[in-house]
Length: 103
Image 1 (cartoon, helix red, strand yellow):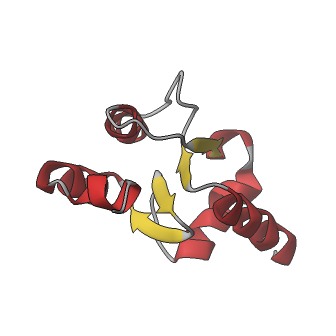
Image 2 (cartoon, rainbow, N blue to C red):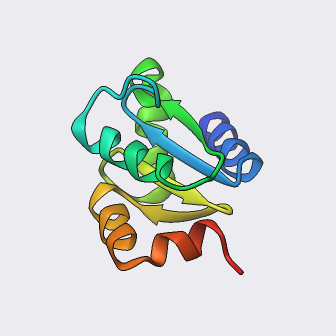
C-alpha cells in the first residue's frame, strides 16, 4: 500500500491543481466528476487529472489517502479541497477562485 501512497503523494505534490476523477477531463465518466471539470475549466488554471477507473489501486488508495469516501477529489497546492459538493459550494461563494489563485 505504501507504493500507492507514494505515487499519489508525488502526483499531488507535483501538480498545483490535481483532480482524481472518474474518466478524464475530455470524457468524464460520472456527473460529479463532470461538474468539477466544468468548474475548473471556468477558471484560467492548469490542472491534471487521474482516472481512478483505470487504476483500481489508485481508486482505493486516494480514498485512504484523504480519508474521504467519494470521487472526485480535488487537491490544490498539496491540500485536499474536497469532493463535488464542496467544490460547487466554494465555486458559488467565490472561495474557489481564491484557493486556485491566491493573491
